[in-house]
Image 1 (cartoon, helix red, strand yellow):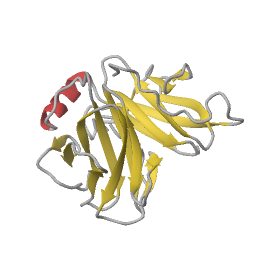
Image 2 (cartoon, rainbow, N blue to C red):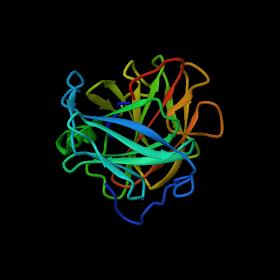
Image 3 (cartoon, helix red, strand yellow):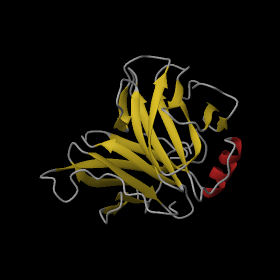
Image 4 (spheres, helix red, strand yellow):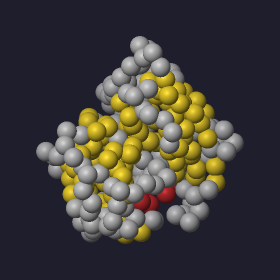
Length: 235
């Protein structure tokens, strides 16, 4: 699910954040999660495979490297709320929360440090994020969706088009992406307002109400999450 800063922003500093790994070490079964990683050049050029990116179940030694085609398969506890990271030197790192059910290939675009530096300026922040994280959200729906941090305030951005995040936009465009910058480590709940109703988590943990998801944030990482509202997509 592509998604990169943006997908984008799908690096860790300070006190370690121990994220839930439900079933880790005790689950009777595992499910293989397929991850496809490519290099972001432009939105029209996303097909370059990214070999040797490390995909790890969060805070464990359960890790695999992407192959020459940018593909990796990671075994995670079946049916659990798990999370994993995707890292490679010279590129922005992802933190991904998911309910492990299998059957879907998750596609991520890796942004170079130089590209993230450019994008971060447009988002009203700076890269790298030493003490905070960035949340990159996506919705597969019509334009006009607003992302809201439940009970929190933060600096938001949305994408005008595939390459241009902006702090001047207040809802999603046809691109469907946006998010928040300068977030302290922790777990946040995000509500999707407008657009279609009854969205379902696509890459995220379920929230406590319809159209809500829970997203973990770690300093230095792009926390990627998405919902599908009557549509499906690649990430």
